[in-house]
Image 1 (spheres, one colour):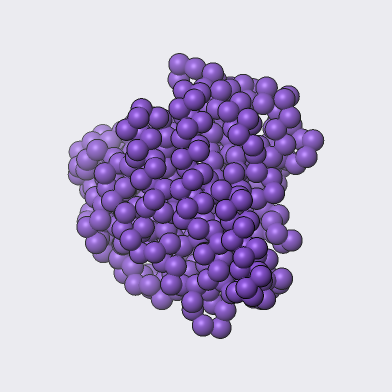
Image 2 (spheres, rainbow, N blue to C red):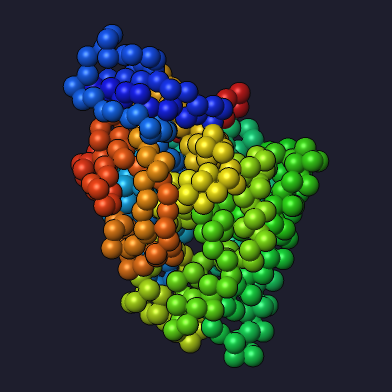
Length: 465
């Protein structure tokens, strides 16, 4: 299949320019002026007045994940369809290692769930939950052979790792070009606050946010930075939520520590007052870390603007408000499944709330949603509109209005945190490796791709390791 996208505004992380883009098969083959005179395409798309963006990459999803007595609602079929309809053309999901399982077996187990269902390309981050010596030794193969050079650890939950494990993983990833990702919350601070609130009988959703205190994130980020300082390695903080955590990252960088930060649309656009919504609606926003005060949102936007926050991920982990969130947690916030939906709304929120409102530039949006993510996680064929890259492309109408409604979205969950929001800017057409997978039908996005067309992408370790 060949496609010619005419007269669009190509946007990169460093600039924008008017050009045609020619796709032949799965790759971008040419970018230039008046290409219709030099190439023949089976499909010609007029993109005047629209942007041509690299497909967004979501480096943080939890599809078909068992958690807290239930399973996240989106599987790889529904979750990747929703991603495609939002302009995300690659997702990197987490696979939680089982007790006694090798990293290889964990990755193959999750691939077995995804393959044949996923509609856009995907990769996997192994999460190290059983750090036996042979598992630490497996980091080399995971980085160089399995195509999974990033490794998630948790400083929270019952499956958290100790400091020694973090040190060993940092040492091994330094050797072999890998990257450790860390969920940074101090377990014992949260544990003690949980005990205090339970004793006081204050168990509504707001107290989830109070228990997962900013101090718990700040301390854990600081600890992670010191472990990197000790090992000379590098680390990636997932779902950064607070200005205090960001300050710790900036101070560590000032000392020469190689530390990267990801934040999420929810921390940029929603605040902790949501937990006080009537009729227990605050349970919709129970996630870890929780929503923070508005000043943290403002600081995180500045972090994106000035390069202190490198990437955006959604932490997409959807549970129905009715039937899952309320399954055990009506009287106890600790039993509410942690997570919220967002895989479909990432690009539209970043454009409408970020670019349109002048918080970040269009180029900064592309960097955070695509280019930086591809570079950090070894997605060498993705993340840019450039000759030779995969034809993962979004023709984006910056003026198209859209009122967010779960009824118009594709995520397999019964709510969206942004219900009723008026957004400006929507995808017109989305391509995954040159194949049209989603398009605007005049009222909403429509999925037009093929189930199972997505592929597992082997990612590359950092060069020189």
